[in-house]
Amino acid sequence: MAADTLLERITDYANRPDPYPLYAELREAGVARQTDGSYLVGTYHEIAALLHDPRISSDLRNRTAGDRALSDEEQSRPFIRLDDPEHQRLRSLAMRPFGPPHSPGRIDAMRDGIARITEELIEALGDRKRLDVVEDFAYPLPVTVICRLLGVPREDEPAFRAWSDALVDSADFRPREDPTERQRTGAQARAEMGRYLMDLAEQRRGHPSDDMLSAFVNEPDPARRLTREELTVTAVLLLVAGHETTVNLIASGVLTLLRHPDQLDRLRREPGLLPNAVEELLRYEPPVQMRERTPLADVDVAGTTIPKGASLVLALASGMRDRRRFRDPERFDPARPDNQHLAFGSGVHICYGAPLARIEAQIALGALIPRLGTARLVQDPPAYRRNAMLRGPRHLPIEL
Image 1 (cartoon, rainbow, N blue to C red):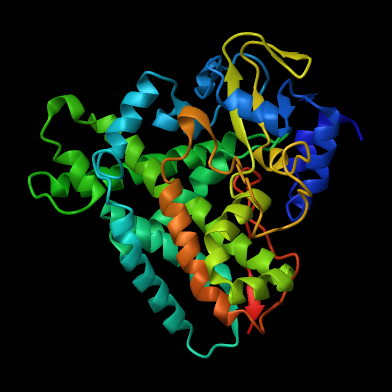
Image 2 (tube, rainbow, N blue to C red):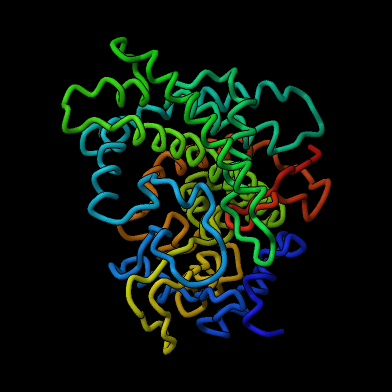
């Protein structure tokens, strides 16, 4: 098949269980111009260079070529959709109550709490012989964690789950599909979630507590305060991003381990390998498969000129299976050395929630691995989520 249909084929739901042969085709093609005018890049070194290139914009409003309309999520202004210096300003303000240098112990201090939540979820499974890893474990763990971190009542989870699903759906890549209805639903969900989070924040104004919404709304320094609009889009971003990708990481991790029983046994014998195994899972089955960028000038990539304003799709999942960078890249190796993957991005936009995601995955898999010795997949491949960009199982039924 022609390389100019690769994005369409990768995003075809029929290929969601295994897009990796298509990524191999992309690496062979080099830079692939698509029928919609976008450019697809899937080789590690080129992707890494573009993630660090100041000529490559994260603000999709700079896109002037192609025929895909911007979604509501893409037109909004969370810091991940902005360039420096505005990106750095908002990211720094959002980071103050979350991590270094202003809150250096915040994430490490959460380890015991995450372990307790994990234990409660494991205990709730009881003696069940069949469970859905996603619904029973991989979803409730990061949702509970992000709720506590932000100060969102856990009992409101059904509402923001629906909002989150709509927002993620509205930002997905689906060539040749009219996105109007998805974008309308996403815009409504974003507005409703934003109002909900601002109401919570306002309840904390003047009544500070130990959560991020409280820290944002009670910042004493006027120069470091988020405006109402900035607080709204930042809170929405943190709530959605704080659980969506981690759900995929944990669920895909269990799926990968059950498909590789020899490595599952190894991790049971050598639990000290678990942090390295999580890094390998991030490389092997990354929760974020693609990111979209826009050149601010004509840019040469591997002999192809990508014009200013074009849609530039970086296939991170493809780059992390590039044999020019990783030895035997199709093999899942929990002890893989020098694993500089791109699962959290790179450069100024590297995921600032990466330390929390790593801790959650390590604790979650560490608790599950001892229970997986006799487990088997009920369905392989499992049902996947619709989203091609944030790829992961929608359900993962197993029998113990």
